[in-house]
Image 1 (tube, rainbow, N blue to C red):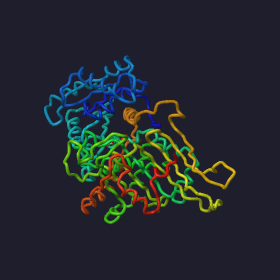
Image 2 (image 1 turned 45 degrees about the vertical axis):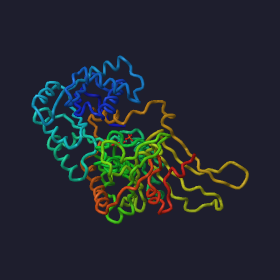
Image 3 (image 1 turned 180 degrees about the vertical axis):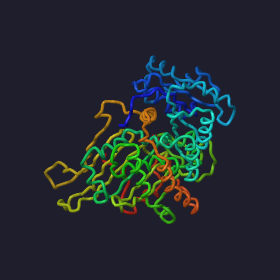
Image 4 (image 1 turned 90 degrees about the horizontal axis):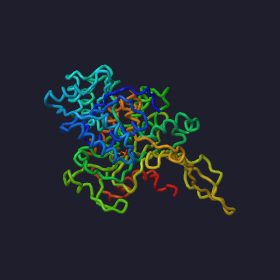
Amino acid sequence: MSQQSAPHPTDLVVFGGTGDLSMRKLLPSLYLLDRDGHLDARTRVVAVSREGLTDADFRDKAAAAVRGHRAVQVTEPDVLRRFLDRLSHVTVDVGGEQEGWDALTGALDPGRDRVFYLAVPPMISGRICHGLNEAGLVTGGSRVVMEKPLGRDLASARAVNDAVGAVFEESRIYRIDHYLGKETVQNLLVLRFANVFLEPLWNSRWIDHVQITAAETVGVGGRRGYYDSAGAMRDMVQNHLLQLLCLTAMEPPASYDRDAVRDEKLKVLQSLRPLTGDRVVEDTVRGQYGRGTVRGTEVLGYLDEPGGPAVSDTETFVALRAEIANWRWAGVPFYLRTGKRMSHARSEIVIRFREVPHTIFPGTNLPGAGSLVIRLQPDEGIHLTTLAKAPGAGALRLRSVPLELSFANTFATRSPEAYERLLTDVLAGDPTLFMRRDEVEAAWHWVDPVIEAWNGLSITPETYPAGSAGPAGAHRLIGRTGRTWYEEERPR
Ligand code: BG6
């Protein structure tokens, strides 16, 4: 899907190289890329941390991380050995001694491309970039990768962007939103722009509303500290959900080119009707999970999760109604929803079509209009509900019948992890699936007033039991206009 050139020999330097992201996502994805022949034989990974590990210690840790990863399943000893040989560890205290930077200089090869992956909290991104620059490590072709959350509001996002931008040009900054690396998200673009049949229907004339859901069964786990200062709005809506909204709503770009695609996404963000004041009260819902049972297991409520205060107004669930003020979408609500400790883990985009303008089947049990469901996870696929005649010689009855495209059944091949796609693109120098500065800032520009209104109007989260469908307010939000969340009518 990306516009890749041949792999280049690269030194991939991971700051936060022994941290959670590196162990859970980056190293297993790099292993899979290596196994499948997508890493140049000369590419190396240099993990940077303050931990004072030897290369051998780090390789042991990495091997355990790779073996324990769900997508790896069986490690092939030769491949694992080859992969581990690419790894090394350098101790750098970013704000400390010069010695660490010297060691890093010694570990890098002047003849290779350099990618600096900042798997660290964004507040220290600027300091790292400054250190790299001072140490003379930023060569002409160097790129930098940043993880979300990029700031906690527009002002802090600008500060991070300024600090990193002082060292790297915008075209060399890769801001990750891992949802853009998911197979079905890329497929959404193909579905919309490589087929002719959807485009005529893709507007307010034929679409009644859109639902975008990212529901998780997991809680905040060991991340309570981070999460308490973020909440679902900053953690999921500002980035993942708004990116999905952009890809769903954007105009056809003139080409699959880094800026053509990102220009169109930006226009969507800039067309979002501001959610402020009373509209925040009416059109947003905050929730926080209490104790409950998720898939048969009793789990703690958010406030009892270790690592954070016993009293907290942090939301673990958000539902909201957004509107895009442009010709294509005027009057079409986009309902966005995300939550932790929900009954089912499910991420999907549901396009709900309007009813037919005139029915020639009066008196039948019209079960409702059709939906197109783009399912990101689990069971990636595309699913179209259509109305069909229920078999039988009696009175005419209509049934909602799904037309299914399951990626697993159709393509007998493994779907790559989101990080495999994104790491491949960074190594190839293709930023199409990464967020540009103006997109990130436009998203904060829309999100900030909502958070300010929650604080200013003391809108506190409504408790929902873990393992449920979220707070009752979310059902009232969509129900006000006679609509329902998709799962309430899901064909079974
Ligand atoms: C991350 C959030 O960006 O996305 C997490 O910080 C969340 O809180 C995760 O759990 C969800 O990602 P995925 O790929 O499991 O849907």
